[in-house]
Image 1 (tube, helix red, strand yellow):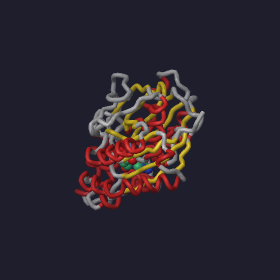
Image 2 (cartoon, protein in one colour):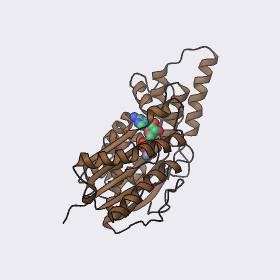
Image 3 (spheres, rainbow, N blue to C red):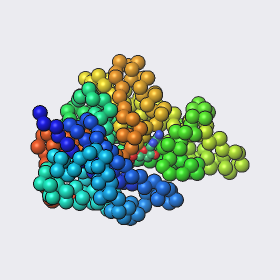
Image 4 (cartoon, protein in one colour):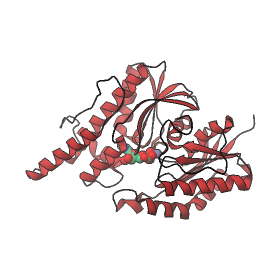
Length: 342
Ligand code: KG4
Ligand code: ZN
């Protein structure tokens, strides 16, 4: 069978990324231009700044992805792009570029749900991975437990009822003055702290659901910090980080394993920015193995936003002939369960 070369484009938040991926699994290039420094001084992503920067970077980033892969546009069989969810102005830059390239080279345009992209990062890292499996997707905007029934067939088994896991990391880091993005900073501090120092709440619902809730945990950490500041206690940042991180990881791990036990699967996968968390990888890996599951996760660079994962997800839509047309628009509030199969 002829090789299929997909050009992937991702601009949903604050990374401008383009990648060239062969047959859905082999990354020929994956260029990621992060805007973190631009947004750090504001403590979070400023949408207008993000769109402007995407606009400046998108063509150079695509050019360098092609040249690093040793390909030209003539070698590309299809263009895959994130169309939602994300920031509307940011998404529009990628969608417009993808439409223009697809029209210019007369090759199919494929739309990709950002969360499907995160899940597909596992195909790149684990060439033997095939559905069905359970995937925990935990990022800045999402915390979902997904049953991946087939490459293009997904069912949500659990979701957050309030904040996403990554959002909680970012908010707590902000309260502690650790800067943006919060996840990597808390991960680092936590290594120096005692995860048992403070017992923060773990929320489990009584209706047997696998859903998450992180807003109570967030409030508990903020109350702890405010109380300590009021009585003039010095904050033990590593202990707070380690205890908070342990509470998040306990809930993510337990619910994911329970969900896997409720389905006929042998593998648990991790995806999304929070999947880069060292404790989550270690604890879920250990507990999943103990419970008889294989546990896989992408390398950290493929956990956070990147276009290789979008090209990989897009490859399976391409094979299925699920092409988008020139009416494709950005869908900022694309829900899990809407649009495509997810
Ligand atoms: O998937 P992603 O790059 O963007 C979204 O689609 O949201 O995820 C970004 C999120 C941020 O909230 C960031 O703090 C979190 O992933 N994150 C981490 C780690 N690295 C990134 N959270 C915990 N531990 C990490 N090591
Ligand atoms: Zn993401």
